Length: 294
Length: 294
Image (cartoon, rainbow over all chains, first blue to last red; front, side, top):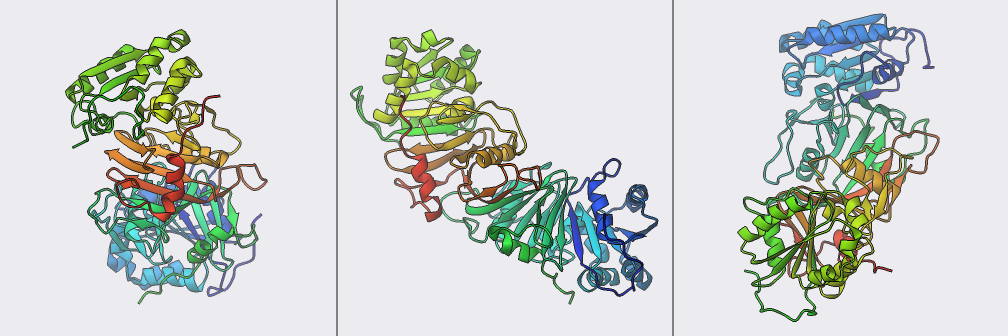
């Protein structure tokens, strides 16, 4: 049973969770991932806002989530559909976000999401909700990819190849020093995530399977994996690679990459089991505050 | 240009190469992998024996390789097709293997290969050719999987799951302490290789892409990757995992796995560049002598 406090003050500080979903989460049957998101609002009667700005088909996304959250017993459901930067600079839209107990960022195209809300009042409100108010924020697929400071430019596949820089773009910045890749096992994205880490060894690669979420608890310093698949962490900080092209061969060489595979059900830190020493550093990166909007 | 000494004495000791091919190597166009195998025999007029025992369709495999090696200018080509243990215990068959400059083990089904030749005179001859005479031995697909002491039982896929032990079986033993998985990227086998390493942390997982070979030079302690793809090494010796089932969750958790990605064109040790410190231990395992037949 989730704790069920009564309606709090609008500015009340809460635990602060990010629910980073690898896309294609179940919306019809067990709804494990969406259910956990609702629980993490820690409210008996939570208000959920679904931010539909990543897709041209915002209306469709809203219908799906409206039904799924209704099935989970959520009474207060609200769409925030945005087609333009004017929409995202509307103070009323930003205020709506700040009243939400849970904010769910729907997927489709992370470039579009950032083109519409990047730097706007809605983007600022997301930071305030996350960093100051400790609200629960979820993103799925493109909405997950966009949560970090650096994001994949698009959803294309790609085998590792040095010289062929995979384009990164500026994301929402609620997480720092990580690079999120979604649909990870399903779209066989290990190669491209290794390639990005080779090019950007300061970033921890986070590959999230479909119907699976990495839950980050900011205040308690905890991680949790929910759903059906696993989360693969790629740490190349001690790696050597030939990304700076050398004379010897052309394809990507990586020596000494660390890989961690965290399955659904795994919990570390917070109230759960202690963080294994080999993961402490990464947990500290994942649970640290995002980069402020300038 | 490969060195081209004249015909040697039958018992002459040579460098000793294993050419471990991830299957589906090109036989019609550039033939990079097969060409390198022929070069490594280091003979101007090498005798190549193709061992067809892994498939019920030995005749077909022979026709394909007969043509491919002819296209590469090999004059002395010989099939060794085996349908039964009687065939494999024929001293003439074993003698034929020992006269070969290069032995090519065709693929199909590694269980069948071992059921036919395991423990026979032909198996003993393979060990003598490899360990004592330093001949060049290649295996592709099932013929690659079978080279090590422990091999995958079959070609089925499988996601990591603790408790669900992936069956290993006894291989040819020309390599020790490694587990070879072929068609690696193409059949998305990272999950199953991680699972096997979790269950067998003394083994180094070696995933080889199609049309790609890991070449091991025994005497010089060198590695080389040839062909089109990459070789992925999975080292779980310092890993912690939940393979022994715990109360916390059911799916496989792996913390601190080392991953190395070696692309075609990479060379280490021997005459090539020095082995990176992080790879020295693995190179030493890969280049060490196989386990003797008891």
